[in-house]
Length: 350
Image (cartoon, rainbow, N blue to C red; front, side):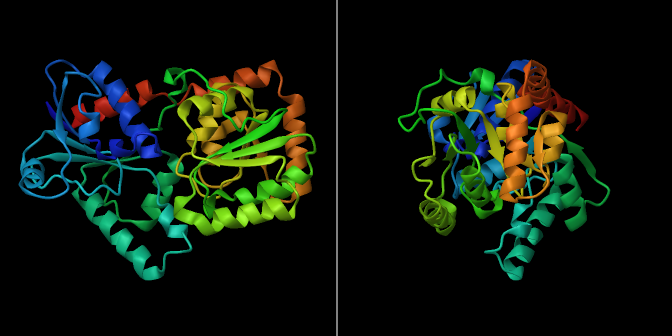
C-alpha cells in the first residue's frame, strides 16, 4: 500500500488540528505494517517527527513540486481536515476526508454569501472523497443535513486523548492560590464564556482560569475583560491567553473541575482531558457535548447564574471515588490507538 497522510497542520503543532496530526501519526507509526509505503506531507521543521518508516515531503504551497505531489498516484490519500488546500489530482488515488465540524454555519461574522461559498468548497471535497469520516455523531448529522453525501460511506471515528503522553506538569506563574475552576479553548463567542462570570459571583472563594488564544475574536475578549471589571472579579478570574502543555497538565490535575458552556463543538477535547484525571466536568447540553461527556458529566440545562451555581455546587459535593472512576472510564473510550486502528481498517478497505 502507498499511503499519503496530509499533515500540513503540523505547522501549528499546539493547535487542535496540529495535535490531531501529531497524535494520529504517532499511533499509526506503531501500527503500520513494514510493507506499507507512507508519505507524509509536513512542514520542514517537523521532518522526521514519526521516525524512519515515513517518507517526508516538505510542504510547498505553490510551484512544480506541489503539482507533482498532487498528480502522483497513491493507493490512499488521507486528508486530515475539511479545510485543507491539498487534495489528490490523480483520479486513481482513493481519498478519505475527515470532517471535524461545520461550525461556520453558525458564525455570526459570516454572511450568507460566504457561508454558501464555504459549503460549495466542502461539497466539492465530499464529491471527490471515497470515504468520509466525522469526529462525532453530531458532526455526521450536521454534515448530512447540509451537504449531499450521495450515499457515500460516512464513518464516525472519535479523536483520542493524549494526556498520558504529555510532558511533566509545570506550575504556571498565574496559578491561583486556592480552589479554582478551569476552562480552556479559543476565546470565542461560540464558547459562551461570558456566562461563567455571573456564575463566579455565586461561588465566592473559588477562582476561575480561562485559558486560550483570542486573536480571532479580539472584540469578544475585550468584552469579557470589561465584564470582569464590571463584576469586580479581577482578583478571582484569570485570562492568561495560550498556555503550554505542561501548564495545562498542572491545571487539569489541580482544578476543582472543568467548566465548558460552549454552544458549538464538533467534539470537545477538553472534556476528555479533564475526565482523564477524574475531574468533574460541567457542560452545556449543546451539539456534541452530551455525546462526549456521557453519564460522567454534569450538565447545565440553562445559563441562569443561580441554576448554574446549583449544578456546580452539587457536582463538587457529590464527586466521590465512584464518580472519579466513571470519568476515567468515559475518557478511556477516546484513545488515539483506537482511532488509528479504525483508520487502518479504512485504508485496507480501499
